[in-house]
Length: 108
Image (tube, rainbow, N blue to C red; front, side):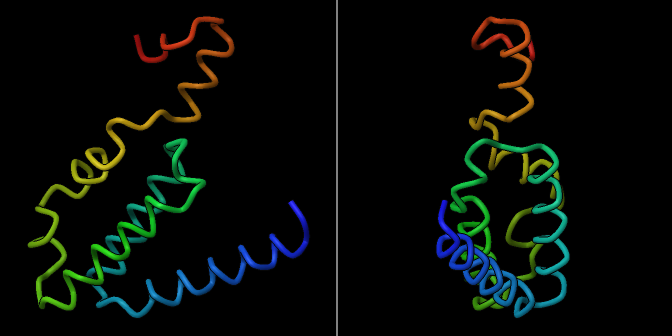
């Protein structure tokens, strides 16, 4: 990765964060909690940016439609977040597989 790539990535991340801050307060709080959860759980697809960008776009559309965030995603934020990554592998699973030597055995 070149310095130019790093700088461009930082610009994109800052633009992303500016969009998050532009959300209504309830959306911003829920988004940040879900983001924190995703960073902790570590779904493998998180690094390509599509999960968080897709979530942000979904929230922007809901806010533009005048819906409350819980009206959009339901009362159980954790279940909604888990459902978004239910088919995603996590770095924890990959690590478990690497130390056990058996692919696909994480969580069994």
